[in-house]
Amino acid sequence: MTIQERKAIPVPQVEARTPVPRQNLRVPGPTPVPPDVLEAQAAPMINHRGPEFSAIMKRVTPRLEYFFQTRSRVLTYPASGTGGQECAVVNVFSPGDHVVSIIIGNFGTRLAKIAEAYGVKVSRIEFAWGEFADPAVVEARLKELAPYKGVMMTHNETSTGVTNDIQTLAALVRRLSPDALIVVDAVSSLSSLPLEMDPWDLDVVFTGSQKGWMIPPGIMMIAASERAWQAHKTSKMPRFYWDWSSTLKQLESSWQHPTTPPVSLFYALDVALDKMLDEGREAIFARHVRAGEYVRGRAQAMGLELLAKDARYASNTVTAIRAPEGIETKALLKKLHDQDQIVLADGQDHMKGKMFRIGHLGYFTDADLQQAMDAVERHLKELGYRA
Ligand SMILES: *Cc1c(COP(=O)(O)O)cnc(C)c1O
Image (cartoon, rainbow, N blue to C red; front, side, top):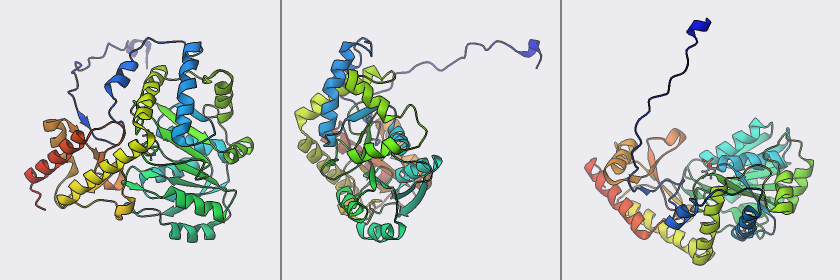
């Protein structure tokens, strides 16, 4: 290329900004944010190395630990949920370690892939989409696969609308391999569904702000047991940004972060935690149980088939529904979006176009869920569906 051909890059012509109408956002993350939490984010910027930011972290951290049910420190990172998966892997394992991955859907697969990307030898205990991780099957397979350094599992599989019985799975791992690290992806469950890190003896637990925490995407929260901190000390995985030691050191010395945190999101989290504690942990869980039962009940009354094969393990934060014969998910989602401002999620991976998902976690009312299900019923009829 000659000098003459190197032209300056012109100012790009972009589409005009149009305001987004009020939507009933029913995807399993990001989820709606309450008005007072949105407002909190409009506060002026502060120095992340100043006393004002430290005061926020001093309020936020113990309240996160309460929701995790742990006496370990909860660390926070500017990241999405996938960052939590990577952060867990690089802090406790080493290249060449043998780790078992219990997989019931897309996010379990992702966690296994991340571990493999870092040179971990992963053995998969895989279940078909819609199934839960059957403890009897897991136990038999774990016996064949021993020894292993850790076991990774998904609490709530957002791609299939299935919740695993983590308490039972963790107890059986602990019985078979007392020193194995139990790594739990709780991105779409922690805060909304019961999960007790210390009582259940879990070693690494992480979650993401945009699922059940009523704030926008951008904060990942993670905690490690004493056993996991010991593993961290000897782990040979290369890491810098995700390193727990530097994050903990900064938190303990100054209630701050080693790098610049998303300050405005912490304004939001501070207020969201006020609201969550006002409602109460048990009341939040109960609200999600009611939501799950309502959405599943409506789907079944319409003659629709849930992806979750066993009702006892159907998720109370997201419901996955198979598209009826001859109906394209895309057409249904488009009608809901264009005509009613209701936003649902498509299936992921091989289930794209074949199912749809309704998020009911974080901030929602009964009326939001009713409006969404009424509209699904109406549009399916228009598309020719007969139960
Ligand atoms: C959403 C989700 C993730 C990934 O989170 P991102 O924020 O999209 O990176 C991981 N695991 C589970 C269970 C999730 O629901």
